[in-house]
Image (cartoon, one colour):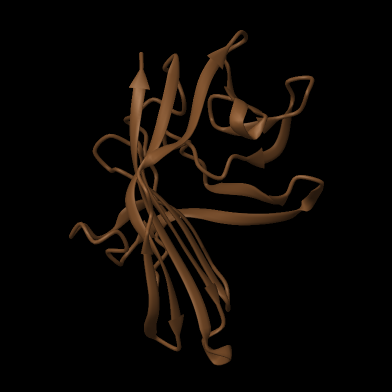
Length: 183
C-alpha cells in the first residue's frame, strides 16, 4: 500500500470548532484481518454515537466520554485550561494544523503519533474520491489516516493498518463518520 503525502493549505474556511455541540456517529466501515495480503476475516463497524463534544464556558469543548477538555482546534487542555501540546485523535471539524500530535498513552506525553497534514492518493473509504484532505502517518508496520470532507471540512473517515507483512498478520480498520452539528 502506497500513500502520498502532499502539503496542503486551506485559508477559506474558519478554523476549528465553533458550534454549540458536535455528535460524531460511525456510519459503517469494517475491520479485517489479513495473512499477507489475503483477507481471512472481515466484520462490519456498527452504526452508533462514537463521541460528543459540547462547548463549555471559556470557549472550550468537553468530551465527557473520554474525560477531555479541548480547545476549538482540538488541542487537549490540562486541568487549568492550558494546552498540553497534544491533540485529540479525531476532531469533528478539520483543525487545519500542519501536524497532529496524538497521545498513545495519557500517562506518557512522549509517546505520540505525529500525523502530518496532506492528501491521501488512495480511495481508502471506497467512495470513488481520491486525494482526501487529512492527516497521515506511515511507518514500517503501521498506517494512520484521518480524513475530512473537502466540501464541508467535517470528519469523514479514519483508517488504521497495523502489522508487519513480513510477519504475516495485518489488521486494518476503516470507520466512516457522520457529524451532526448543533449551531
